[in-house]
Image (cartoon, rainbow, N blue to C red; front, top):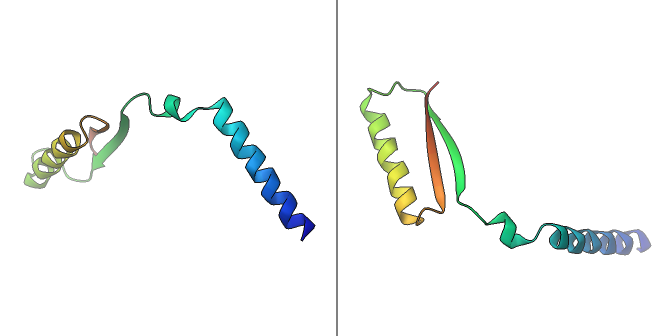
Amino acid sequence: MMKRAFVAVLVKVFMVLTLTVFPLSALAAGPIKLKAVTFLPDYVEGVDAFKLFMELVKKKSNGELVIDYIGSS
């Protein structure tokens, strides 16, 4: 029982220290960027649909989520 309470206190102290050192506003300062790769070459029709999906994600998220298309593998 003492071990469980000690671990709970330790976790809470770690959370407080983490939030004071790394404030949440600094983490959300810029857009979230994801990298995307397809297994199909660029000239295949399915890739066009994926590029359209990337544009829709960017538009719906107001630029907060950006998918960078690297190309095909």
